[in-house]
Image (tube, rainbow, N blue to C red):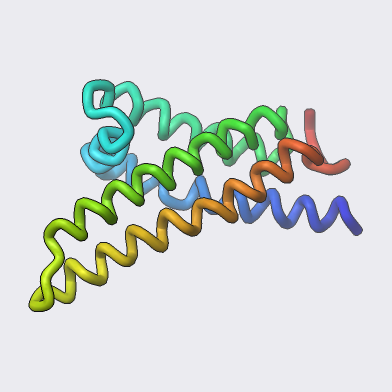
Amino acid sequence: MNDIAILVLRVGVAWIFAYPLHLFWQNFNAAKQAAGLINQKYSMPLAIIMLLVMALGSLAVLLGIYIKLASLCLLIFSLLGVYAHTKLSKLGQSFKNADNILVSIATEGQLTSAWKNYPIAAVCIFLVIVGGGKYCLI
């Protein structure tokens, strides 16, 4: 039973990272801008690394290939996501005024996006410690 639960958890983690990939591939400029929140000077290589970590990490977690290493990479990625979303939220707060509800909603949305990365990181920590269960390829 525990191995089935871990497998379900792995499918969920893989989906969280794999789903937005097509959006970043379609609009690579958005991926570069997102990576630029971490380090503007290296936004291009960071964007490529970001997409590779998302693609390979989600696939590895799903299939159970070096799951502890893949989960560690996704954990770091999640914590960098907290930083990036918090930075965007603070940027939005500098434009916030009572007359612009769209900016207010977007700012709060970025903050909640930062917060959602904490439970994702916690699941990645779990997978780093416990592994992927018996339904792993490697």
